[in-house]
Length: 373
Image 1 (cartoon, one colour):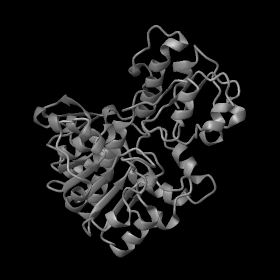
Image 2 (cartoon, rainbow, N blue to C red):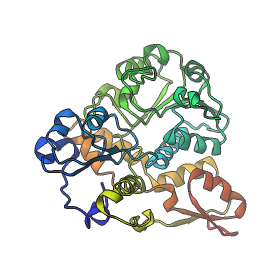
Image 3 (spheres, helix red, strand yellow):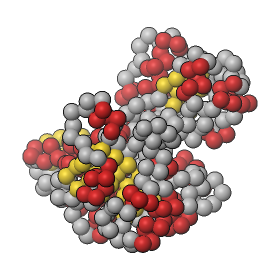
């Protein structure tokens, strides 16, 4: 959780612990508890903190927090909706461009199915449309709420999509249960050469069934950022994945700062903050600030630019080398602290290409001559 001192240091004494090591001893005299997804804020942890006045998670998902237990004790809580939407959308885009480059195929004209059309799913869909992909959306809760977009049922999405992306919260029960949403039966609905991307929660896809499916359908391609059993994913599944990363799709400098900043705004009244500085106050400069393009970008240009900001190939290699070592999964997550979002890079080139790069999330500046990539 970056910039804690800069954001909160003037208002509270800050004690920092590894997320998986936060237990009853660490929270006994805590007034405020700020976490990310690896910390389980359950009844036992809450009961051990009699002074607790607020719990915040600097993440979109909050399945790691027992919200009912907090509400029963009258303790307010907050997540950080939308904080990592851009980072997740850019992760998926970079992974798709990288896999397409490996296979020598074009993404334009292919159909992307997005399961979960909230913040991260929408960010992914917008970028895919900029690449010329057709997008299908499935989100029963949003559809019931009257979202004006066009939706399809899940079975239709699975059978018609060339690429399927999961962007749902983890719900273990109820009408909108997403635990093993993609199970053996639904995997069988996929096209034999479909690509499956999971960048939400590992348990949304039955990992054992996915191993069996990949072995039966070797032309199926897997981009996996999340895993059942984290921080100990199935070694068989890691070996079968085309791109494998340690639950870092939303891990950008900007996303982490944005998550903390959202919590700071929520806490402002409790902490006596009358005016919260803008997020830009905390965002550091990028090591690479601009790139020139003389011509409208090809898919290859897009892939190279995306990897200039985030080298997903290097991340994939490091993860495979380290995930099975003791503590290796979390070490890889912590080593991933300098990834920037596309907005940190300005594309300089002719005005007619600015729209494309803006849709993908880059900043743009007109330069009729460009400089070449």
